Length: 266
Image 1 (cartoon, rainbow, N blue to C red):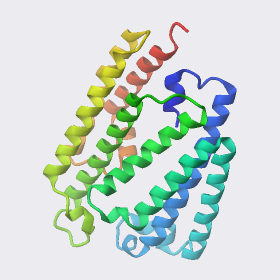
Image 2: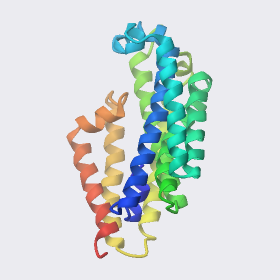
Image 3: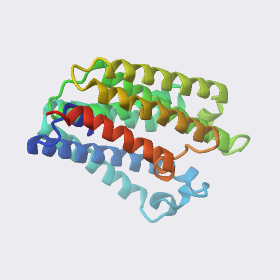
């Protein structure tokens, strides 16, 4: 959500900040509605899982009917709020809702398409921030965002496949993947994202040095993440990023250099 406004250097403007905040709340409502739908749909499987069985629906703390009612309410509120911010944001919100609901009910069972659907959801969230603030989104932005999303999703699938290898409870879709195909997807996602980011960095009209320096932590971050996934991590990307000190340092370094390119000299 913040990527496009920060890259454009306008996140500090009160109106832009308010628009981004509103779009953020709207997308959170829509994603929460989808998570509730997933929890209701997977409640029987989750009860057999050592961690997921503690989820409110699986544990019986939240009735399925109540969860579905809350999901519908949040979906309606999310679309309404997005449309109030800007009709185009409403369209993005509807697209995101349609994609995530389709994933929950059908796409999750289709090999490769399931990964693309999750990655597309990340891209739509990033696009919502740009659309809400009427910021031009370059093809480089979309390519880097999309490839990084595919990279993270493939890493998650690879980690899940390694953990559940040989287990009866493994999802049918997961069984159709192979370690080799997921490793290839990881390599392709990282390679294209890296090339696209480097191309973007060296085509900046000003402060090229800052963006050029940001290439190093960006590429090293991808490499470090891949190494951790190979070592058995990656099922929970957010936990991995927050837990690994090297990833945190690289994230901070990239952020500072990137924002230096955006704001220094203005």
